[in-house]
Image (cartoon, rainbow, N blue to C red; front, top):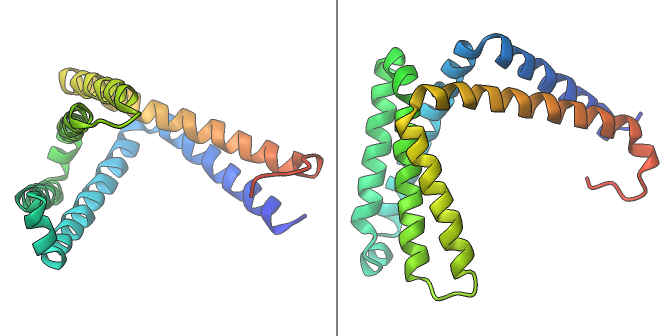
Length: 178
């Protein structure tokens, strides 16, 4: 058995186990997701601050200097709030995620409106879909949380099964993507 097959089998089994755990323990899965989200916000906030300090003159020329600082501060503040109150992070995870998605979707929509590229309509339609999805998350935060853990569990289990099938049928595939 090749290293790639062993790796696919191992990863497939881990994904299936994690998917089953996500189905069986959605609250724990949500707590883990909020912790990961908190870390991502912390890293993004630090990265944006570094970007501001490293590329200050370029950002000032493009008028995005204050936007970058604003985003960095918001990311760091939300990360700190989640760290200081884990229960609040679990409760507000969907709302913060919805606000973040709405903000990014709105920026994408504005960017699409100002664009004159050949992908104008595609960008506009995709940003509208993103806006609609973010509004649904904001209006129904608890449903969004439940759906999130369920979708992740489905993804993990189906990907795990796919990896196992790939690992065992790999010799039959002439040009596998590796």
